[in-house]
Length: 100
Image (cartoon, rainbow, N blue to C red; front, side, top):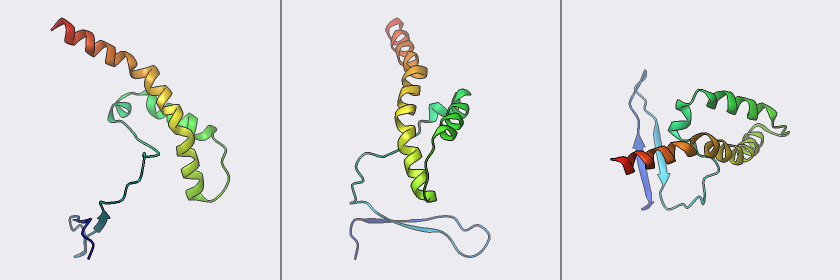
């Protein structure tokens, strides 16, 4: 019935029921509004940065609207933070590669 869908079953935990996710793989959601890189989590300043920015945004409305708007506001700040904090990591990796 839905040729572009995939079904995912998760492990049974406490009861005899298990979670089921049906995902339509043909939907193009365009650019994702929010992305988190694993390397950010390894930096001790990340949580402090996110917490401070999140509290500084003043958005009024329903819960999902506030979440969406705050994530939209956070995106450019994360891009800037990533460039400032991790740009040197890229350069250091390239220099190390040249030496080897």
